[in-house]
Image (tube, rainbow, N blue to C red):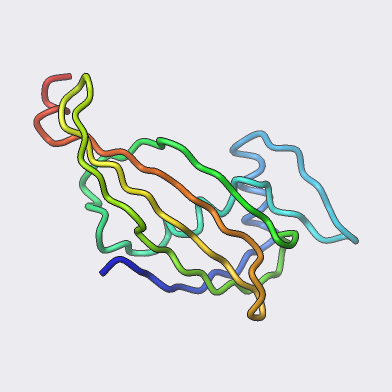
Amino acid sequence: MNKLEFAYHLTPEAILAYAHSTETPLQKIDGTWLAPPTMPVTFWTLADVPWLDKERTFIHGSQSFAYEKPLLAGAHLDCVLTLTRMEQKTGHSGALTLYTHLLECRCKGELVVSAETVLISLEDHAWKKR
């Protein structure tokens, strides 16, 4: 399985907590909190992603975001996370697996944001050498 669908309700409290934890300045549009631009990365970390081993540690390789509309507090989002690529490489620390994901979030059927994220996992033996 390389696709996961889930719903996410974006609350003002979630926006405030994320902005505080990342020291991101807060903004409002017509009195409604605007989510920080990198916040969508956190949405799918709450879901059970079947192709990512929860026992493994992942590091961020890269991320990019494309917004079609502002991501506002109160939005009820329908999200689809897709594993678009899985690639094996060898780095200085040993074998690596790169997982490229595309997250698309819609509100009332309209695309709000798409985010591409690359997560990197070192193979077990590489962690033991550190």
